[in-house]
Image 1 (cartoon, one colour):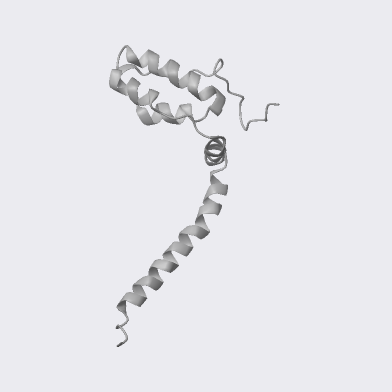
Image 2 (image 1 turned 30 degrees about the vertical axis):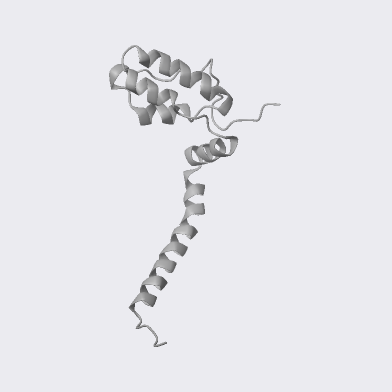
Length: 116
């Protein structure tokens, strides 16, 4: 049973990764690949690598080396792409806790060591 996807439905057949020839950017291609479902990722990745092999073999190899995301990683990517505000809300308390712990550790380092 297919699960509904946020935003427009994307499949390997309907989504074509942009080909920028020799100037193709690894980050851009990787970002575009990660918008696809994990089931569609491998087909699109291999197609993109095959196209790039004609003009940029090193980049083609780097694209082909990209691993298909797990379902959990894909879900996290979708959350980050479509609900940035929620991700910020989730990360905010963690960043605040880290800052408080760093401040506490810094204060402890400044205290003189107790004699044994």
